[in-house]
Image 1 (cartoon, rainbow, N blue to C red):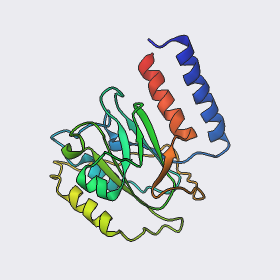
Image 2: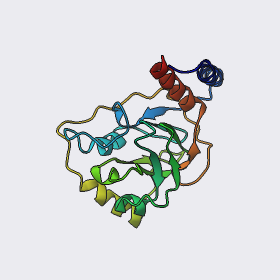
Image 3: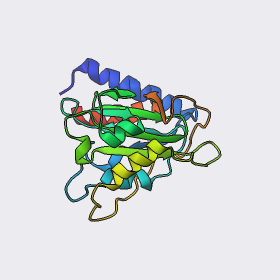
Length: 202
């Protein structure tokens, strides 16, 4: 069971996030894959992350939430080349806290995988397309094409993956940052992560 100070911190985070949401600062947040946790995909759905990444209308300002045991896994953003090769030696951004949130703050394709040994090659990898503010997707680069070929090499799943609803339909198209993701954390995402953590502690 969590200590009183840990529960107090989680409660404070939730309260702050609720206040920000009341002011209309929310954006959509998606739990990656719709599975119990971010992990190598099950044998019955080897392309679960490929299908999930295609099933949702991501937009600028949205967030991706990766939930996993921090002692067993991680979530990293990588370049298209690194994604295609499953090379996690030099990630764009790496998180390993178990409640990893990446904000989609620039148009283009963003790539994610796990830095745990062998997980990327087992299909634990995700790419998402984020359109520009006008709704148009950027044309794929040669590196993007190579990454798509790597995804296509995964076997198809036995059944289609259902899309998850977002927590909010509001987006903030004014954010700017590196291609795909600028960094980690947002009020909405922190609220959801804190709520999930609180539920696990209680």
